[in-house]
Image 1 (cartoon, chains in turn cyan, brown):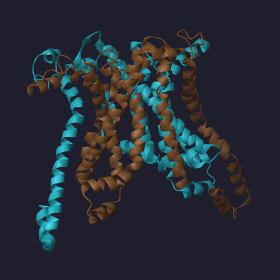
Image 2 (cartoon, rainbow over the protein chains, first blue to last red):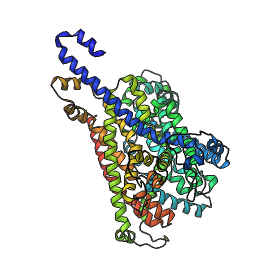
Image 3 (cartoon, rainbow over the protein chains, first blue to last red):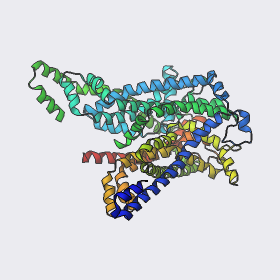
Image 4 (tube, rainbow over the protein chains, first blue to last red):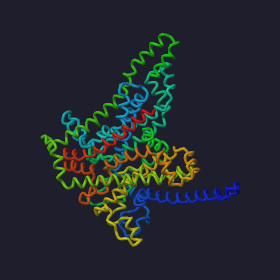
Length: 303
Length: 311
C-alpha cells in the first residue's frame, strides 16, 4: 500500500523509492516471521506448564497428545490451594519478600542519597565498591555464610539455620548493592538547584531526602522495589542451603522438595505449583512492565 | 566544591542566624552522610567481604575444620578426575551459553527494532517472559518437557520420524539441554539491553551511511556495533559472571548427572559442601569462580575510570 502512494508522489525517482520500500516490506515480513518463532520458543515452557496443570494424573500418563488438554480440570489448583503445606510455602515466600523489600529500601535509599549528593571522603570508592559487590555471586558465598551462622549460634545460642528469618539476613546482600546503584543513578539525575533551594530554605538533609528526592525519583523507587521483590521471590540457592524443615521453606524450594517424593513425580501438581509460584512476578511484570524494564536497563546504561 | 560556593553566595545577604544554621548543617554533612551509608557499609563488609575472605581461610582447613592443611584441598582436587570434568564443563557451559545469548539477543533486538513502534511493546512483552519467571520454576517446566518417558518434544519429533532423544539421560545431550535452558532464560536480558542501545543510536548516522551507499551489513558493522560497543561489553561481562556462577538451572535439570558430566563449579561445591558436608573442600571448589570475577572487576574499574576522565 505504502509502495503505491510513494510511487505516485515521486514519479521521477520511481524505481529507487519503489525498490527501497519493497525491501522494507520484505524485511518487515521476515521480522514478523522470526519474531513469531522466537516468541514461540519463549512461551512454550510457561504454556506447557499451564497445559499440564489442567490435566489429571491419568491423562498425563496416557499416551495421548501431550500438547492438548482433552479433559480440562481445575483439581490440581483446588488441591494445592487447600493444602496447608503449599499455603505455608506461599506465606513464607510472601513474608520474606515483603520484609526484604522493606529492609532493602531502608538501607539503599539513604545510602544512595548520601553517595549521590553528599560528597565525603571515600564516597566515590564506596560507590564503585557497591557495584563490584553486586557482581560477587551468591554461589561463592553460601558455604562461608553457612559456616558463619553455625559459629554464630554456637556463641550466642540464637538459632539461625533452618529458620525462615535467616533469609532476611542473607537476601539483602543480593538486593541492596543493585538497588543502591540504580538509586544513585536516579538521584544523580535530579538537578542540583532543587536541593540547594531546599537547603537554603532551612531543610535538613533528611527533609531534603524525604520531601524532594524520594518524590522526584519515585519511578526509580518503584523500579528498585520491583527488582528487590523479584530477586527475593526467585532466590533458590540460599533457602535450599539454609532451610530444611517443611514449615520453614519458601515456595521454589518447597515445590521441589515436597512435591517430588522419591522418584514419584506428580507432574500435574508440580506444574500447577510452579505456575502459581511464577504468578506474582508475572503479574507485577504485566502491570508495571515499563518500570521493570527501566530497572533492568538502568544498571548497565548508567554504570 | 561548586555547591559550597553557590550556597555561600546565596546565604550571604541573609541574616547571621540563618548563616550559622547553614554552617552547622554543612559541618554535620559528613556525619549525616556517614550515618546514612553506615547500614550499607555494615551489610557489605559483614555479609559479603568478610565471608569472601572467610572462604579463603576455610579452604585451607581439613574436613572437620580443626586442622590447617594449607593447599592440601587444592592438591586433592587437582588429582581428581571429576574436578577437571567440572572445569571443562563450566567453561563450555558459560562460553557457549553467553555467545548464543548475545547472538540471539542481538538478532531479536534488531527484529523488534524493525517492526513499527506501535507493535514493539507487545513483542517485547512476550519475549521478556522467560527472564521474569523465577528460573527454579521455569526449569521445572523444562524438566517435564525433557522427561525420559513423556517428553513432549520427543512426541513432536516422533511426528517427523526422529528417534527418542535422551535429553537429560546422556552426557552430550544433557550438556546441550542445560545450555539450551540457560540460553532460553538469559537471551531476553540481552535483547532488552540491545534494544535500549539500538534506540539510542542517532538515526542520522544510518541516513549518512545509506547516502554513502552502505549495505545492511556495513551499516551494522560500521554504525550499529561501534555505537553499541560499551553496552555489548558490559552486558556480556555481566552475563559471563552470572552464567559461570549459575546454580538453579543445572541443579534442577540434571543435578550434575549423568556421571557428573553437567556439574559446574556452583553445583559441585553444593554437592561437596552441603550434601557431602565437607565445607572446606566445597569452599575450595567455589573459589575457582574467583579468577573470572577478578578479570571482570579489572575491566569494569578501567571502564569507570575512563568515563570519569571523560566527564
